[in-house]
Length: 149
Image (cartoon, rainbow, N blue to C red; front, side):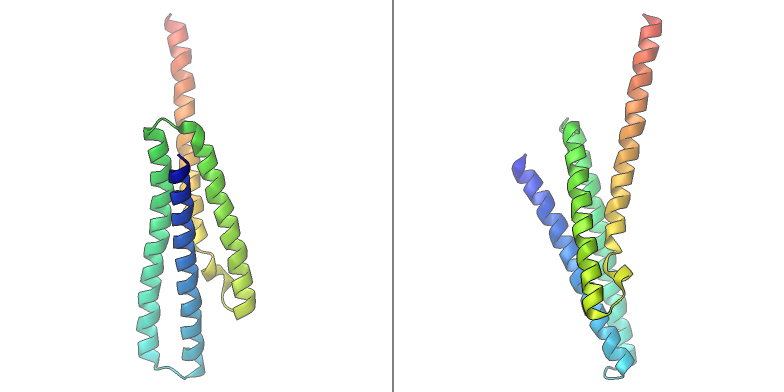
């Protein structure tokens, strides 16, 4: 299980780092565009393409978190879902701080630098809701069985 946890952490770190790197590159293109040193139409298409790439990174982050939890449920390792959520939120906090620092250093839009974190955290909320609903139904199932017996 330690190997799987390491791969999970590695994938989250890699995808978040790639997202942040692309956003920093987009910021440099925007700066060149506003300074007039780059052709406007070319810069526009570059920014559009890089935005699509970052949409894919954000989607992959969401899928990674959701499939990580789904894998734990299927392997009957529900007790590790809490650990997975803590790891995910810890990495979110790490990249939130990194985004604030990058925004402060470059003067870029900090919100763009950490928008991928919302994807991961939304996946954590979905997992929490699933766990709460499943726990509710399990507790009610026991109560109904007690009444029948």
